[in-house]
Length: 328
Image (tube, rainbow, N blue to C red; front, side, top):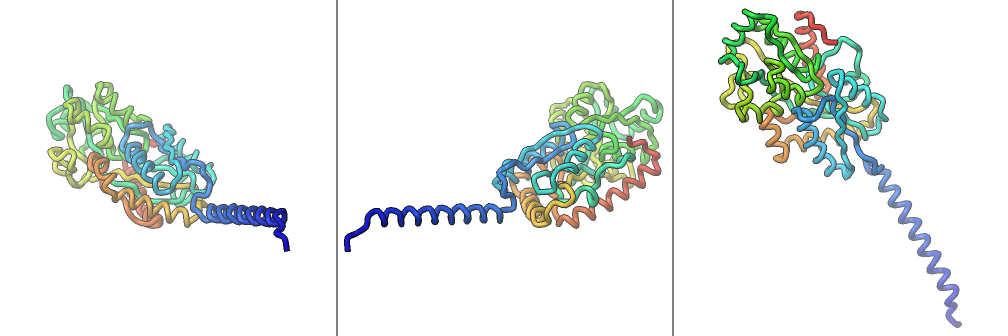
């Protein structure tokens, strides 16, 4: 029987088409099984200006997260209203795992804003560490005790900068007032970077700020560091005492950074993000940034992160009530 080349050719073409179709179907199914099947970027919001501790740590973590997910991770600074503008933007985003936000805490508002456990779901803890009280070297009293004495003699003459109203730095400053019997005035900024510039320039006599943006100015001799707010000293400022060592008994305040996502984000994506972020924060790649800021890496499940935030926020709300703080 003669060989039918035309028939053979048609058979080969049909087989190739069938195999191509199966390959497309298989690839589509594989994509659907991926946690982030779309090639669109993951947007990671920061509610403060660039340059602060939160921004620096977020950008480092985002770069490593992009390597884990295979997706581009874009950090977007959306400063304003002590982080509330960014929070509102995230709440309006689709709960699909493509939107994250770094939340500094404790942060309190009188107005109703999105909260973890309600409009936002907890993903992971980034880090926890101290703040530091600083002043321009040219005008700084020698010690915390000297500073307190001058502040009591001239209550209206002293103010301090922070990264925002209701922020951890604002609350740490008010705790200083309560424990030292002083009345320095709070001056809120849209982020630590802007606040540092005005303290270095002498526009504001004091700053209660994160360690990262002030560290270069402390080392260059432009800023004096009075004390860190935690109960322990930090490696990057070994000669700077704690507030307790400086004479303020029972003073302790820490700022923490957690990652949130819109409520309703799939639990499998939240769990995977939690696993990856925990690993990133514990890695050697993050060690230098954490050491510089005096922070320790976060850890724990999404549920544990949510419980920690709720408990710490309750403590600071009690301080705000006692101090009759106006947080708007």
